[in-house]
Amino acid sequence: MTTTARTTPAFAWVLIAAAGTFALTMGARQSMGLFVGTLNTSTGLGIASISLAFAFGQLWWGLTQPLAGIVADRIGAGRVLFAGVVLVAVGTALIPFMHSTWGLVLAIGVLAAGGAGMAGPSVLMAATTRLIAPERRGIATGIVNAGGSFGQFVFAPIAQGITAAAGWVAALQTLAALSLLALPAAWVLRGSSNAAAGAANTPREGTRAAIARALSDPSYRMLCAGFFVCGFHVAFIATHLPGVVAACQLPPDIGAWSLAVIGLFNIVGSFAMGWAVGRWRMKSLLSLVYAARAVAVLVFMLAPKTPAVMLAFAAAIGLTYLSTVPPTAGLVAKFFGPANMATLFGIVMLAHQIGGFLGAYMGGKAFEWTGSYDWMWYADIVLAIGAALVHLPIREARLAPRVAPA
Image (cartoon, rainbow, N blue to C red; front, side, top):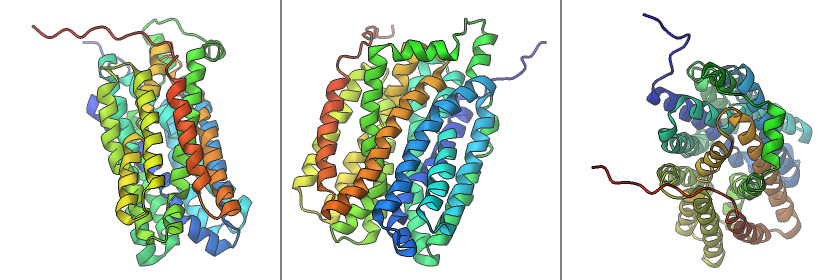
């Protein structure tokens, strides 16, 4: 009896490893917005300076995605994920000891965000795509994406509770320790897309050639443009929603629960999107998601700012928050195949995080200039409408008609 060098992990183990890693790294990262006000009080640096550290983190998280993807495609996802998780823990643990803008940029923007990028969607989605059969990839990517939302749902109340009981320093140290629970996933998800292609005797395209071919494709560029808008929305809300709550003179707990509700409802949105990508064209689903965001923000702007309204808005945003990831990753895989998936999806994530940099930083500047976040919400509406429209010309083959089983 012959055996292969490595047996492909079971479907459930792949999902537990990938979704669990995303839950732990994203949960820690998306809870950082709870500490903006505390960091400002502790350091006296000002909201704009602290927002710069968070904004740089958004940009660096994006910059590491294609680089981590290239390395993962060549030497394997396991080593990249292991290093990324360690950096998330180290960066998060160092935040309380940084008392300057550049110190916060190092801890939040370079170490924690860079580690989260290495253990982020480009590597996790590529590993999932490599280890899962094509007919199950849609629901698999939806489950992995829901993992990040579950992490946000769990971590935000935990961080707020520990802050109230033992202080914000203890809360950050706890987040750092919890992120280390993702280390075993590196072993489950080890292996590389290029090695898998070679084992299957599939012709491999060089990294440079694959990137050049993708960037020359108008549909790929439009996909990047839409994901830029997604990053703007997500980073602004993750960083400044607690500040929006404070500006509306609502209790701080509403900020934590709003972030948690976003995570909870994004689980629903991610599962729904994972189910939908096999039934409707992914570009149409993306247009629908961005249009729904524009409507949600407009209704929120017109509504009275009460705790119930804030939580309802968080639920509406949560349904669309990261549900853009499965169809975006699916389109990349559909256009170019799995061989360079981590690299090409990493470039799309870079566009996402350039938008994230602007969303996080301009949120702080807008509040500093005007004393409110209204102009950021107006920008959100306009950009969401633009993203809904830019996906419509993407050239995606129509789905084959589904035949009822005999």
